[in-house]
Length: 354
Image (tube, rainbow, N blue to C red; front, side):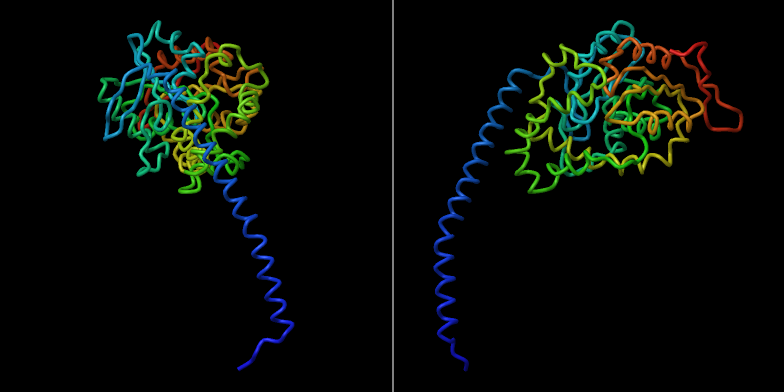
């Protein structure tokens, strides 16, 4: 048996003394961190209660497949379904004026997609565009909507495309605004996806993530509207804390993580779209490159039409709602003429560009 030398014993004694001195510091640091997280959790809970009290559900609910979806319905006539983008909700279309404009001539149904606004998003499902399309298709059937014009903005465009691909006989036409259709590297994926990670993400969503989100909101808002200015009515009326609630952050983070895989899954099927498609984009979009995304999709779909708005960014429906309405009108009157022997429809070119 080997006995410790005097030097080794002295070393062990010194190490024990160092650990003893450091232990209170570590404990103090852990206590301070815990207190900070508890304070953050309290602020997030209070702000969530306040924003939900100030912004109660504005529409109706439909329960489908055990999931409750919130939607706003206005007007009458040909149905138009509006699908918002990642991190948004029905209020985005309300503030832009698009719901009121469309309701003059159409039956407008604007959904809070799963996890946003007041719609449920069970964790047992991976909410790909296809999964959301199936849920929305069942919801539309339940509320008596058939052959709608489906308008999708940003991430909502992927859901609109999935509806057109999986339920071609039940969709009249598509209007796709500022969409992301082809996989490209994106910095926002690693930056904004962590709140969707189990356990760690839960801790983040209920403590620091909403506070960080509120700090960076002015920068994000400027980016999605650039090169145009952020409209005053959006600044004044959009309830940003509704999008920073823990449930909404989980939905947004998950969709950010799914964005590239979803584009991979859909890109092989675009040629299957059989209905008229109107593609819209702003040439100044700093969030989604319109030439890489919208223009390329137009080239792939010979029966589509493509409208570029100069000086507009990602939030095209705020910058040019009348042009979006013109696209909806075009989609409503477009007639699909099936070529003999080919299972596809031809969208005749309009007399003049919209």
